[in-house]
Each structure stands twice: as structure tokens, then as C-alpha cells.
Amino acid sequence: MFKIPRGTRDFTSQEMEKRRYIEEIMRTTFMSFGYNEIQTPTFETLELFKAKSGQEIMDELYYFKDKGNRDLALRPELTAPTIRFYVEKLQMEPKPLKLFYFGNCYRYDRPQKGRYREFKQAGCEIIGTDSPEANAELISLAYKILKNSGIKNLKLNIGNLTILSSVFNQLKITKDQQKYIIPLIDKSMFEEVIDALRDFGIENKDAENLVRFLKTTEIKFIKGFIEDDETKKELEKFETILTLLEKAFGIKDFKIQMNIVRGLDYYKGLVFEIETPKLGAEKQLCGGGEYDLISLFGGKDAPSAGFAIGFDRTIVALETENFNFPTKNIDVYVIPLTEDFIEKAIIIVQALREAGLTVDLDLLRRGIGKSLKYASSIKAKKAMIIGPDEIKQNSVTIRDMDTGEQKLIKIENIKNSIR
Image (cartoon, rainbow, N blue to C red; front, side, top):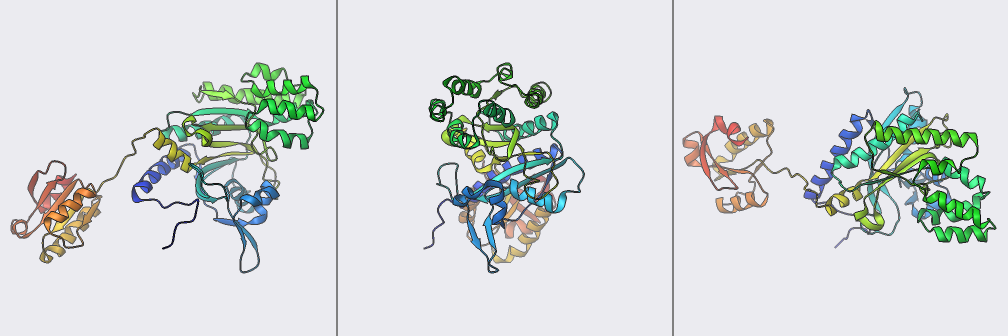
């Protein structure tokens, strides 16, 4: 017997119903913000992902040589393919360009709850503007998508990597030292950050000041760390984004968090994360911000920003909150009592389907008892019985599967009686 590969999943029809429901909410929300859907290949050239993330990404990739000896990789995320698509084919499109997508991604990772080797992402990119209102709208879109999906318990954290990099430079923390302490900062291991900086020869006062900066949640405190004019401009923009988010977009429940250090090599400026605490270690649902990939991929430089949402974690979060997913049941299950009535049953089934109803037909020629039991098991709202007594009267019997009540209905009145 063959078994499913580790880190992948099969989805039942009930699970797919949940997933399609959430996907459609997300799609509708993206489109309401003026975004247009695109799709990119499941595999790309290996060099694309190495250009974005460096040699270290190799441990996470599913990569291979094709029959033409070309190095290819299954996509581990969707931002790089989208920017490749933009550079290759979309640079002349009017700006700002707003793109969104859904797709399966692949990473050789340790499987656990909410983390798989094959997983689905939803996300978007906006290219051609870095205005404060564009960034505030981007955060608002991410937050609204998750809220519209039904998640109640969300935490929005917002940081700025340009400001963080400026503080690193002021404290004379080198690039190599930054690479060492960034994983510690990401995990809020602040004592370990201080110890590491001491080992690097950074003065104790400066190390403690960095940690104070990383822990701050107030703009006025951040201002005290900024010395150069360029970073002061970035801080003004950051403050405007937060003001717009609160006063114009109506999102007040957010926290400034300066220890968000995602992708420091290519992210710049605004960064943000949205999480749901109930998921524990895998609590992050969304991450995004401003980045610089277009010139890296050979395109004419243009401001760009975006975010990715963990689709699978969104489903897990909803299930953890006991979200009541709507179900779409069969409207009517049609039972021809004998072979003589199959043709008539099919004609009725076709007419009902064309009228927009969800209709199933007994295809096993079971007895009435087994057919009604099956109709109950698939949660059909009604059962329709077609037999000799019914046909003599140009009628069918409609049975309410909840109450058991039965009525004889004329064929021409079937649609109205089922709706």
C-alpha cells in the first residue's frame, strides 16, 4: 500500500469546503482593494531563489535537474516568482501595480502543527509607490483579510528595518555581528544579545541601549535614538503610516515592535507581522513589508512592498477558535423506485440543476429504505421519490429529511417547493 509523503496532506471534501470558503473571502477582499490575481509556475530556476535568499536557502529547497540538465526548484514562497514575472513581463504596466495570488509552496522543513512541507500561501505585492498611505493600506488589507476570514484574536506588530539598521550603524555593530545577533533578536533573547555584543567589544552602555531600543513601543522613545537626517525622514514616514492606520483605516490595536528582523538583506523600511497567540510557537499568520528585489532580479528599480499569509495556519487558527464554517448541503436527492423511472428522474434532475439547485441522483438502484438512509448520511435537505403512483398523477413525493414530512407535488411545481 502506498502512503502519503511526510509533510503533505490529503483533504476531504469537507476540508476542501472550508478551504474554498476562506479562499473566496480572501480573494474578494483582495479585489475590493483594487488588486488583480496572477499565477506563476510551481517550479522556477534554482538561481532565482538563490539570488533572493542566498546559498543557505538550499537546505530548505526541493531542487532537481530536468532532462535538459537545467537546475530547477519547487517554489518555497511566492514573492520571488511574482517579482520575476514583473521584471520579465509587467514593467511597462501602469503604476501602482497591485497583484495578488494563491499557490502551493514547498520547503523541506520539520513537519508540525501548522507547518508542512507542502503548504499554501496567499499574498500580494504593490509595485510603484512607497507612500505612507500605500503602506498603511497594505497593512490594513492584511489585517482585514484575516478579520474577514473570521479570526477574532489577532495581534498586529509593526517595525522598521531602516531605523533598526541606522541604530546598528550608530552603535558600530558590523554586518557580521548583526548576522550573529539577529536570530537572538528575532527570538527576543535580549540578555543573550547583550552578552554577544560584550564579546564583540561593544560597550556595555551601548549594548543595553540597543536592547532598550528593541523593547520600545513608543515613537517618542525611538526619536531619541535617531541622529542622521535620512533616518529622521524615515521615522516621519513611519509615524505617518501609524497615524493613517489608526485614524483613517480604523485599526487601533497594533504594537510598535522594533525587533522584527525578517529578511534584513532585502527587506527595508516598514515591516509587520500578524499573529494569533492561540497557535503557540507557530502563531504567525502573516508577514510583510517593503523590500528591494526588482533591481536584484535585473529590473529597473521601483518601490515595492507586499505580504504573505499562511493559508493553512489561518484554517488551523479558525478551527482552534471553534469557528463555525458554513456547509453547503445537497438540496435534493432524487430516488427513482425502479428502472422504469430513471429517464424521467434524470430529466427532472437536469431541470433542477439548471435552475441552480444542488441535486444528486441515486445511481446504485437501491431500495427506498437504503436510499433514504444515504440521503440522510449526505445531509440532503430533501429527498424526491419517483414511482408509479407519483407518475400516474404527474407528480413526485418530496420528503423533508429533517422532519420526515412527505408531500405529493406536481412536477411543474417542483422548483418552488424545493427552494
